Length: 377
Image (tube, rainbow, N blue to C red; front, top):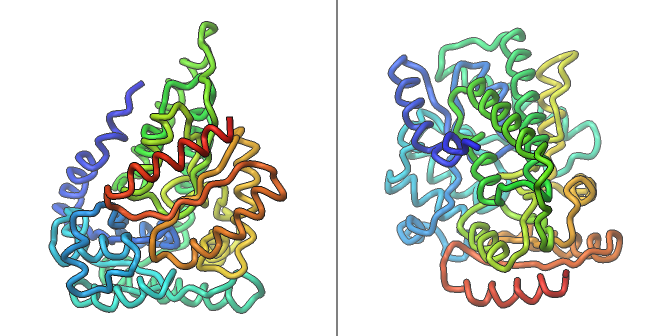
């Protein structure tokens, strides 16, 4: 199976970005899956993910930001002020969002570096008022995009992007189900590369084609009659967006003989089963779809529990590891709600891990995950 286009996505994406910019096109750096790709692309702009996932730039960020902030915020800002992320360098504008207080204040500093639009999220999904507030915000974002690209957004362009992004979400989700087959040769790190590369794809049509090719290859592999099922506990990883801490947990879990078969976080499966309605007003359809994303910044957040329940069945999950960042108050608080749901309603083992991007707690994590895997066997 050819995973190189996904594992080496950074190399391919940077080459595509350079070609895109050489043609006079614009690039938008985005930090969250609340950023509507359909609207950004319909305005002639290519969105790329900028979330900081490494420890290296955090020290510089802490010269201006509190050390108590979560590592994702500090890493993201550190890359911006040190100009050590090529994707940030390529970005002409930044699309930001109010998913937490720390991010909001960090963005006030970042907007002195590059033009930035801050999407004002409602704090709940209930009722008509949040929807109309969010819809109005999307129109404000549209004005910002047009101002910087010079490309007017048409309903035809928007509709075409809606269909394309829906196809990508559907294909990616179905591919992840195949990858989690007990006979599949792919690891969680392979699956992570496939999922993460979506956020760096300058040409989404090419990305969709690569997904379809990989799916065909996996289908052909799984059709072989001589395959044996992999043994070991099947783990769902949930919680904060993927970063160095998630990589630590995945590596330790799989070294212990267990298998991370799905990741319910922002870098994983979150939102993939939420298509944009392809009929009716495209702006309203986009607003309704993105407002349904089950982030812990929403209160209440029942959609996350519903999504996890569905994934437990689809991916045949035996146990759940909930990984949250130090300083991420919403996901840390919501972990108690999730634990009660998983243990009391679903009846599965549950482990909450609170960590950061450093290497200092690896052995502690290994001890806790090893005991948890033994309990779940």
